[in-house]
Image (cartoon, rainbow over all chains, first blue to last red; front, side, top):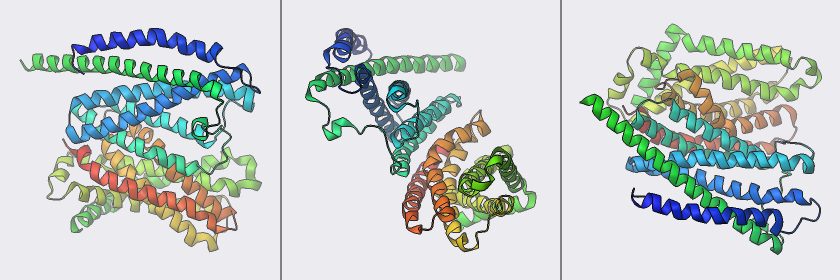
Length: 228
Length: 222
């Protein structure tokens, strides 16, 4: 991501989002057929699932970036890891908010400790800890190294959390994309929503990355001034 | 191997002379048991099913206290640099420290467990070998991650506050499996169900032991 192409690419992405988000909203709220038993309630699915997919993508990206930082020691990767962790929490926050809203009328409880819910919640806690670690270091290089170490640990820990609770009784609907249980008429809406969320993620990630790069540069300049 | 032993022995000698962390670990663990006794006061009939959770919470809390002290002595006396300068692989430092925290935790756990048995009126003679196995593997996994995170926390502004915030979400697989395994031993007749939690705990321990050993070098670099 060179600095010159940054604004131009962002404008393009912004325009796509400007058109794409209303389309996704329309498809989710009006375009998609109403579900037979749950009615309009099911429409929250078009936000819940894309947010979950995007959040997982963000955490996976954080893992890759953390690993690359440990190997290459390049701040580029650190900024990418930071941006993806923050956005991962943002999108998973959406998952954890839309989930209970749906669950209250359908399951009659806001929350239950089913494997999928537990694992999502713990994933959020892990990355919240990741951001806390970043806050508690002064030296930017130390901060980047330690954060990368924890990023690697957190991502490896996630599947273990999953395996340790997998055999609990799960009332969460199994992913319909895997089982192919989603009605064909609902697929376009879901596809567009997933695409819109991923583009939104890419856009926000680029902005966050740009901001972090500038912050690093300012920090570097300040230190140079101090030295002089 | 000798170097690992040397670091381990050093920590052990310091601990047995000062008894700093062991006393606080023990006392804190017992206090946790007492608090649980009051928190679960009305459940005396079903206490046996609550004991696994209570025990592991006490172990975890007292273990965290021990981990907080693991690098504290070096930090306070400015000996961290000295430790880093010894002609040994960083992995050896990690393993020595891990071994030390593992032994301290096991000692604390043994005492907390016995006091727990008395306080909650449990008789478990036949189950002790199985319980020992679960405690050993669980504690090994706990100190495998804990040693690495303790080395991270000791260099931060927040120190003691940061460690549990990092540690607890990460060790959840161990904690869940350990509580499950302890519950099976205490409350179920069929021990075959032990296989799954024990497998997860072992996998966790090996995986995080290896990763921590590899990453420890990066963490201590200054």
